[in-house]
Image 1 (cartoon, one colour):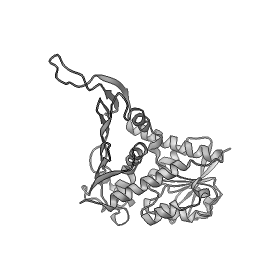
Image 2 (tube, one colour):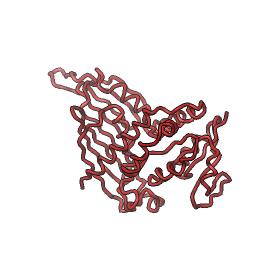
Image 3 (cartoon, rainbow, N blue to C red):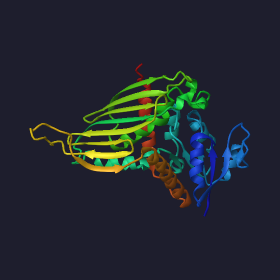
Length: 324
């Protein structure tokens, strides 16, 4: 059986997802919707109802449109994959949470980092004997998108509709991943900035979290600097790092030189690990989870739905206590 997918969106991230789908033999992109633009592709339509004959629909449009499309697809009986964030207001999120169960079991929000090797590694070593009790996690993910010509006129740079675009699009992945392993009781500092002077939305933000009786977390994301993709997890007995495509664990803490002074612990594990490739693989695995459920006409796991709502609520908690 070949699954027919309809897409809302056709460029940037939507194009990335379409490319992944087109590498598969068990599904096909049969329709692509854009509300106004004529596109030189026979699959493209400006009539949303043309997607209703698909087995599933992927919402990969600008963040501000996600909830509107979920509403417009209320009469659609198939499955829906919607990119994060689920909603851009608490009112929208409340309405999604109130959806009947028969809608929730066919609605999947694409928090793909849950399916990543990064998630697996964090899960394997969080509070392990090798690392000990985790006291701090540092995440840095940056690149120079804000300096590309096409960024200035994109929805991401539109501060009127997407002032927190990097928080909603990038930081949300790491918040969701951390929320998956830790409780959501924390205090926070959210420090967004527009550094490139291109567009009117924030292109950089630092998020600092202090979990109750748990670690501190620092997440730096930016579209306004050079490419960096790094992770550091510090425990009471060792630390885990991913830097320059290398995954490394050093442990134990009690490692001394001949004079009895502390020195860097020996390497416990050292492997190649490309975070960008891991991100790409997580997209494939997340899509595979969704498509498999569609093929088998099986319910989506409600735990994923509930976790997505929880993460989105944390995002609003952070925005509503903005510190400038």
